[in-house]
Length: 112
Image 1 (cartoon, one colour):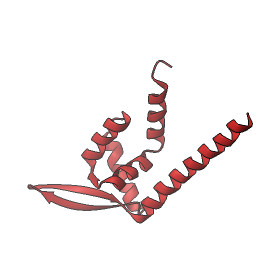
Image 2 (tube, one colour):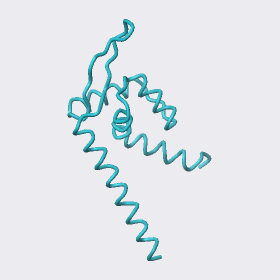
Image 3 (tube, rainbow, N blue to C red):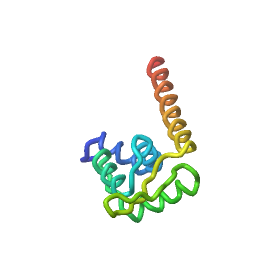
Image 4 (cartoon, rainbow, N blue to C red):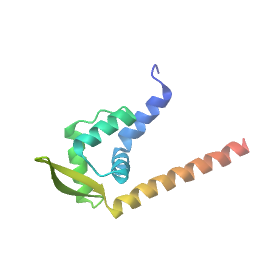
C-alpha cells in the first residue's frame, strides 16, 4: 500500500458506487456528460471514460433515476441530466444507510 489510504478509500467507493455519486452530482446541479466526467475527476480523482459513463447514464434514465433534456446553447446541443424523484429516494437511502452504519460503529467503539 504505497498510496494514501484516504485516496484508496475514495477511489474504491467511487468505483463501487459510481451511480450514487453521479446522482448526487446532478442532484446539486443538472449537467451534461463531459461536465460529469470533469467533476468526477476533480472531486474524486477518478477518470471516467465516455464508454463507461454514457451507458450508466442511459441505464439510470431507463430505470427512472434521471431525466434528460436536449438543450441548445450558442449553437451547441447538449443532453443535460437531472435527478428524478426516484433518484433522490435512492441517494437518501444511501445516506441513511451510511448514517446507520456510522452510528453502529460508534456503539461498538463505546463497548470496547
